[in-house]
Length: 365
Image (tube, rainbow, N blue to C red):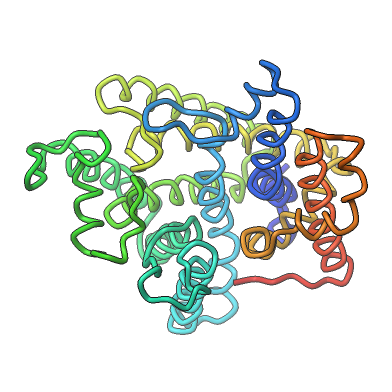
């Protein structure tokens, strides 16, 4: 049985909601829970929802790639539909540029310190939404203008070119680029181009756009597979197989070219995309193949307004709003109160998203 192309792929909405849940709730909750409990188990959970200093990976390292991956996964559905309906690529390009600008602008609000209204604090490129803008833009162009094989070649070239830039180039005053903090070509380029508007951290953004594009393209490949006429069970198995292959290839190549999330190394793209395929295969199997849908409704509520959830959670301290109602519990819960505040804040945000969902209010960039 092929996929009904007129219906939404519910597993993508649910997985997007799962991804947002990790971003807007899980990291803060487990960090505060560990402060209150202090056990080895809560320590493990808190560690899995924090990024490593440089080498190594945690579950939280997959959350940002998953966001880009899912943006790519809907391109074959959304962009294909726009081209068919408008019949005018100029109109499609205008919408594409508009979306890229809005994502960059929202990125400035969320982490670019735009709301500080201080040019000295402003950061040009420093946020997940801006990484999505880059990946979405170039992946959309690839989808519009290249064949499927051309997109595969583009994906491979992004990984190879970026790996070469990180290993064969020379960093002035340092020497040959190596995948270490302050010694890699990607960070040098960011500091050279952005100057005082660089984010000042060890994360890299400009030529890392090759990695962002590759990650988003991997989502495009998944979306094309789901959109194909293949039976759903076979699609789920292919997603699983590709996920295992990507993860293994990334880990093996990572022996020579380390997996580093902060600079989005090519091996990180492969390994994280592999995990994204595995997660999508699991959600697709449960929801779209087996038809077990009801449990995913809370995730769907979040996933259908993912950008709203992301921006509001970074701009508004919902846990502090919850504190106005829950403050009386602090005397009884002591060290656990921080986790309770986070839970309450998430409840407020979720109610807002639920209200929007029930009223068919979906904010699309």
